[in-house]
Length: 303
Image 1 (cartoon, rainbow, N blue to C red):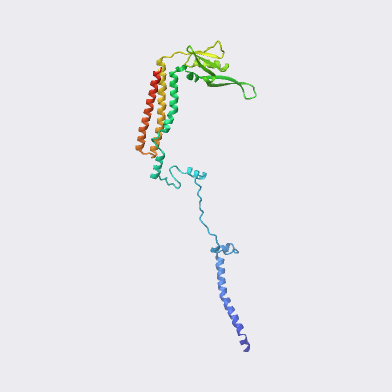
Image 2: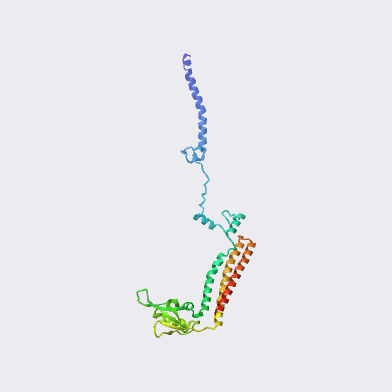
C-alpha cells in the first residue's frame, strides 16, 4: 500500500502522456490521408508544400504601343484599310478639322496657274518676234535646224573594228550664222566634217529647200540666199503659233480646274466656293486670251 502511494505521481504522469498520444494520433492520420489523396502528392510525394502567400503573382501582359512616326507604326497604318482606323472604326471629321483644311487650301489663289503661264508666254513671244524679223531665215530659227552628223569611232573591244555613231545637233552648235548684205546669210562651219551634213539638212528642210553654196574665199563657209516670203505666208505662220499658244493656256487652265473639282469632291471646299473659283478662273483665262489676241495683231501688223 505504501509502495502504490509512492508511485502515484508517476502513474498520473504516464496517464497524461497516454491521453495526449491518443488525441495526436487521429489528427496525424487525418493529415496523412489528405496529403495522400492530393494529385500533386501522388505525382511527387517528395514535393514541398507551397502556400498562396509564397506564389508569384501573374499579371496581364501589357502591349506597348510603337512610337508615333516609327516604321512599325507606318506598317500597321498601311495594313489598315483606307478610311478606317485600327479597330475598324472610321476616322471622324469634325467641323474644326474641315475648317482648318479649308484655310490651308485657297481655291481663289491662282498663283500656281499664273506661274505656269510664264514659260508658255516666253516661248511663243520669242517665236512671234522671230517671225516678225526675218521669218524662217532669222538666225534664231535657222540655228535651231537639226543636223544629223555621222562619225566613225574605234570599237571598245580589242578587235580594232570601226563603229558608226550618229548624233543630232542644232545648226548653231556646228556653225556660226552671220547675216550678210545683199540678202545673204553666211554659215561659218567649225569643222570640215560638218559641211556635208549641214548642206544635206538645209536642202532636206521644207522651210529652206535650197542647196547652200560654197564660198570661193573660205573652204569652211557656206552661203544661203534669203528668199522673200509673202506677207500672207508669214501671217499664216503667226496665226498657227498663236493658236498653239491658246491651246497650251487652255490645257494649263484645265489642269488647275481638276484640282478644284477634287477639293469639292472631298468636301474640302464648299460648292459655292467652287463655283466662285470657276468664275474667277474663267476671267483669268479670258484675260490671257485677250493678251494673245493683242500679240497676234501686233505681229501681223509689223510684217
